[in-house]
Image (cartoon, rainbow, N blue to C red; front, side, top):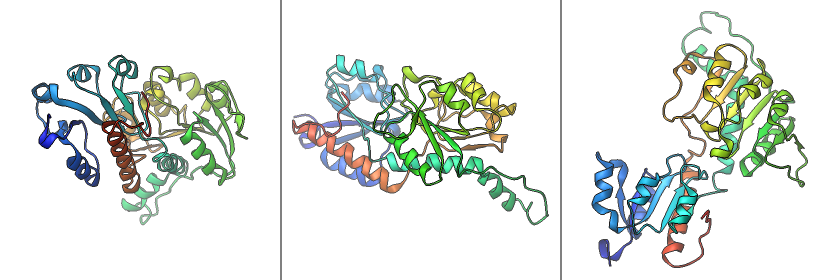
Length: 318
């Protein structure tokens, strides 16, 4: 048997909640890559013994690392996104891949609506206005934009897109969406062309999956169609939006505003956005609540336990 007291050895690429980390330590011999100053040498020293990887949806794991691990059996993603893991490469290696769908849907949808409200109502601007003493000095604060009753376009009508639509109904919004195909059971209007959807929307929320198939689908034409009064919210992946085109549209006033939780080259954020009152920025934290991060971690634990017990994986991707 390999590992401490016969425990399977596991490579943890990024931290998890302390409660989840303690349970992983109890069941596995956990090697924390994020603590190591020389990750490549660290992996090389234990490569023949690693049977599992735990990683985040945004971080994933490279093929180079996967190929260093001849005994690798499973990659457990602590997140819903799978675009940072080469699924086809995993199939070729006969490596299982799991993620944590459903448990983060509500939080991500909540933040999508929160970013829309923050951008439209200029909540961050108002916060700074009070903190900096401008209200006390009698300086003028520009009016914001109404949200209720407006037209909302949703890019990607999966679990999260539907949860966003449900919340938007409470604001009396007219909801339309685009996706690979329409969903018959949904009452919302399906618009197959993204640029057309943008032209018919006051606000556009991006909830599509990342990956090559969706790279920069929200391009300059889409942003131009959304227009100088429109607001873009992205709680999906930074790669889904043409980031240079977005920055230019905001700086030049061709787009009215943006609420962004994700960026193309995280944690690097275009510095031009820092000075824009019409941009609300978050550090990729849509699922970052205590409750949801614990629920995600518990699902990672269940997938790992099922795999090593030879049982069906609860949320298998590969």
